[in-house]
Amino acid sequence: MLHFEIEATSNCNIRCLHCPHELISRPSGRMTWATFTTVVDKIRAHLRGEKFSVSFSGMGEPMLNPQIYAFIKHISNDALTAFSSNGSVLTEANVRKLIESGLDTVYVSFNADQPELFAKMTGGLLFDKILGNVKTALETARGSTLKILANISITKANEDRVASTRTLLEGLGIAPVTTSLCHSRGGFLQDETVCDTPPLQTQNWSCDVLKGTLFIDWEGKVLICAHDLSGDYPLGDLMTEPLETILERRMTLLAGKRGLKICESCNDVMRIGDTFPLESRAGGSLRDWMYWLHEPHADPLSEANEAMKWVLQIYQKKNGTDVLVNRLLAIENATHRTLVSEREELASVIRERDELIRERDELIHARNRLANERDGLMRERHDLTIARDALQADQAQRLRDRGDLVQTIDLLQQNLDARDRQFATLHRDYVAMRQNKIWRFANMLVHDLGRVHRFFRRQSAS
Image (cartoon, rainbow, N blue to C red; front, side, top):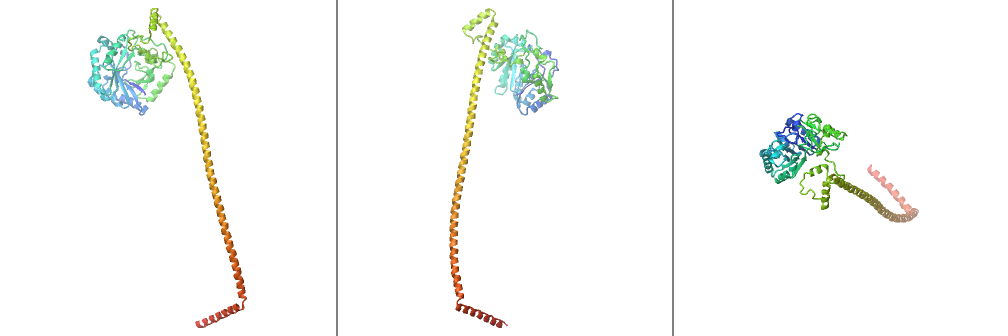
């Protein structure tokens, strides 16, 4: 799912300790309806009905843009929507508007559990007021689809109060409570009294933010991230270009071997968040390791037995904690190598098994093919047997028919022979009769009488 960070406004009503907002040199303002709809139309044209997610954050307080509710409603059926807020305008009426607009999640930046420290972290916001707004928001959103969550930004000022602040927020019913480790914001935050996160000892600059998020400022321009406060690293302009062109530029940038200058001084954990501190990947990614430091732990050595705790005490007294860490890493690496070897052996066994299975399947296939051929030959033999039997039956019938015909011819011949004999008899009788004097006299008399009769008929007629 593509994720977009759309800057509803670059204006903010507070100055947080860990945010270099005052160093923004690119233009300030808030997004118009025309700009927003143009941006969304470009996104929809590219995704063609596919879901996406949008965070309306950037470098400002999104609720300072009165059109934020219309923005959310316009895309609520197509996208997962969220934004981070300082909570200053999170009133009951505004929360109801957010619910009606279809917003999914609000992350309240809540960085301390003490009024003085809270004011220091937020540049003067009243602790009781923001806490009251959070409680009101939670009550108002109860039973709706809107989630009210919280994030703690960790700096040197509040790092000792992270656990107690988390307890306060969880007591309100907020879960989960997330944390974010302060960083140099692209090199713009260099005050070590605020943020002492050491620089990254790597040239890996393929940032998770750049890979996973497309930042669109309030003017519709696409920058590499929200911390490009000067606007010196544009990827394009959605007011004049299609989204496909900008995504291609990002892919080209990510494929490059050299990082950008702004990235070289950035120590955001997200910059190499998918890196694994241990080769075995035990413990998760670098991001998991960073935030685990500030997770609540009742006993720092809860996973260690008494012998290991004693060993740690000795190493600590000799300032040899780094030696112990190296020892543990060596054990982990050796274990990992053994595991990799065992996995390779297992993979080899699996490959052999798969090969045997493949051979078995081929034999079964060959057997089935031969069985099919055998069945085909048996069907052909059966058909030939039926055809042979039919031919034999036909031949037998023809023989019977021929026998009947011979009998009929014999009978006819017998009849002809009998008639021939009769004719010969009649002929002899006829010849004998013609030779008889009486018959000859009678025949002459008949002839003469016929002549006399014809004469008298002519006389009568005349």
